Length: 116
Length: 109
Image (cartoon, rainbow over all chains, first blue to last red; front, side, top):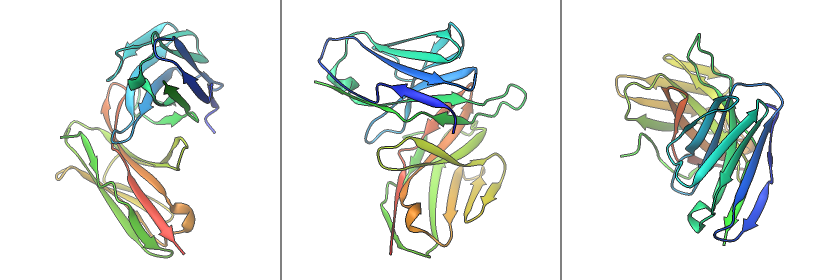
């Protein structure tokens, strides 16, 4: 158990509304990630964070922003939700080590978002 | 061409069978690899890491062939509980994981 929770677990919203998803970890890991998973695609990285206030874009970052004001929380915001952002969103943490440059990620339970 | 490619399946096998999945990757700079298991409507869970030529954990064996750029996962003595989707993942550095779309396994009684 990697100690990751996501909220909400399910959300239905309307096109054009802002949406914020929260990822919370209890293990004090430095790296946190947001992915989306869609049929026909592997998990795709949206944004990631390598420390408080340190974030970077992933493969599919357009339309999303993130914030990390505390080590334990990583927020994903859809500024103006669109139907193409209907997806399952997973948060992940990493146990990567600079010494080994290995990368092992553990995932939260996911948030199912439907944008109507 | 996708960076990590998998046969989507489904692979239908009886209990007790041995089944193997292959996964190919296109980025020769990929440093390490992983197999994740994902149950329906659940999060991916790490099954095995593959850093060198291979890894074995009980009934599961993963092998890496860098020359041919593929990774395989062998499951022996399949159980009903092995039914899931298996995701092949490549680590290309700088905290970047590239996921395949998964191979679905159905184990029947």
